[in-house]
Image (cartoon, rainbow, N blue to C red; front, side):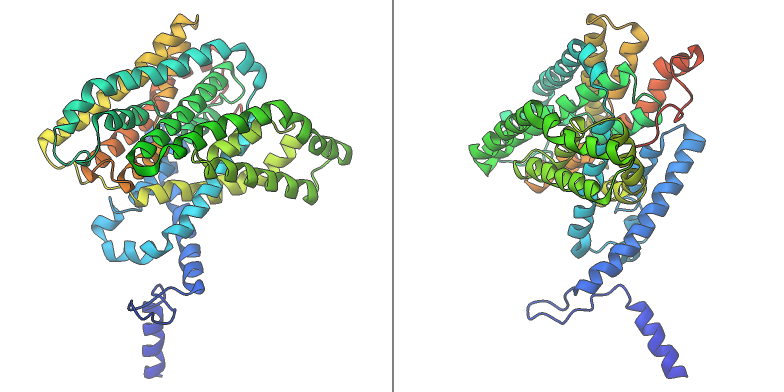
Length: 455
């Protein structure tokens, strides 16, 4: 009995260790079963952490669920769990399993943005096209001008940028980071604040989509000049324009039969759902393959999908799994690559605060001014500025690319992480302060989360 118990305890202790045969060059390797063991445990922990931290954020800090999920992802990484219990953190999230988690995270965020595109009100976009274009342009131009002003100073601080990065590349990269709006985060906030069907929500989503696309195109240019070759930028920008143009000309006509089939049957069949999900996967693949990002493939296809019963049925079948199960993987994967202990001196903290202040001025201030110049009233313009100022984990994605490609160092990476967290956490409270609370009192908006279902 004692030997059996010892054997059981040994087996239990080694549950999360590799079970594959030893390779010649390494001590151990991961068998297929090892990945599934970790994957299911990771999912359970991710869901638990996201729901708990999200509830705490909503209950005590007035933050939407999505901000709690973002923070939970960071807490599960080296910034907290890895700091206080590194062995446990590595046992749950070994680096060998990150690729599996990455694939699941991309599926989650792209599918979520597909549903966001499905709910986009094109009539509101058309009525607000001028304002959306102005807000988007100001949200890109101002950050690059400000980046051009302070990037030369950052280049003189050792360790922030790689020694081989030129001033032009560094400026373009910082401009892209500041110009970025957390598109998935913005969509979640808009849905949870009851803005999904409103002109303000549609204007902010449209401008945010354009700003993110511009930032990714600029990143493609930086990567091209940093060693990827001009073909990277040509493929990314040219491919995105061609694909968007194709969907604009033929998308609704090609996809209309799916809507008619659902209307005729009164519900969505498994066949129609399979075709829809296949189209979504192909769209995400195209945008990912050309070097933009799969989330834009999901979003733009959703924009051209049939509305009515088709949209209702699709959301009912896909939305719960996408939001509760898949999307939290996106936040956790980025959190696993985030360290907040790198800004460890007063001078570096001062630089981090300067980057934060410049980022807020460039995004919040510029978008507010542009909205006012386009005729929006002051509360609406302030609300747009507050929403557009959110960076979220899209920021973490782009700076992770910069770190992996050797453009920036770990210290600047951490400063930009701090900027992303602060601007995201301030978005919802600031929006409620300058617009949401007054709009709810006047009846323009319903209660939080009551107008639109959480996508």
